[in-house]
Image 1 (tube, helix red, strand yellow):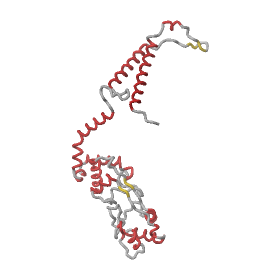
Image 2 (cartoon, rainbow, N blue to C red):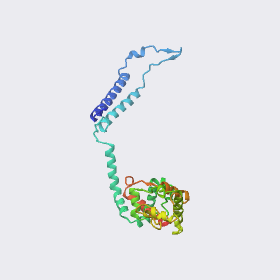
Image 3 (cartoon, rainbow, N blue to C red):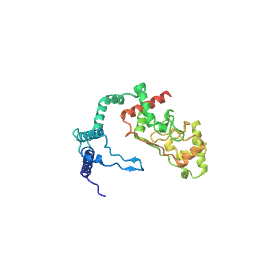
Image 4 (tube, rainbow, N blue to C red):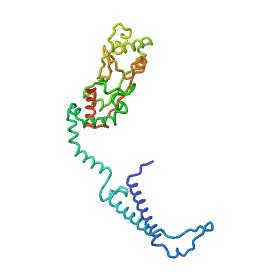
Length: 298
């Protein structure tokens, strides 16, 4: 179906609106001003022996009320949008009002926002008002996944209060995680390992790394072949790749042998959404400072 031009719909709205007003005006006038006096002489019909249908006209104050409403409608349509594409004498629009209020907001708060963006993380972390604001930002945008206390949810989302950062805990790294999001890329290794025995050995070796590296462990040679490139020879991880430490006894998906086996078999593809389009620079700066201060306190 062809798309009708805007001028067509604008004209159609004007016709409907004007016709409706004229029809209402004719109806009101016909009832109150053009009513024949003979109408009062007609005999009122009777229903069910004693039920009479009255012919008393509506109160006159209804006429003045409707007339006032019609006058108001006409004046409104002259001053504000309502007749198709006609913008009215005041040239008002919702978009214009939004832009005006946005400009007013920017004029009032832009200096404060610039002050926040230019402040150090330490200064923001010691500012109670700034941290209360940041806590509100976290509660609104982050707590659904990471928990109201930022301690994460077992097996799903990491804690942000334990000082362990998969993608790095420096301010720039945390800010990048918030702004651009993160995408994990742990692939499954079952077919590469070649069997249940090798899988079990690697899982047990990985779990034992927090107690030190056992060079004689049967799973070490498979770890060195398939895992060392990302997680390092000692399991220190690689924040650049998002490869977590394996020697700190912190496990996002659980520290049971079954959870580690599942990770090795199926891989993990966790996603952290990007908030660059949701949060502005000062909100991201406040949130980063809040996370740094929280980890420092803990």
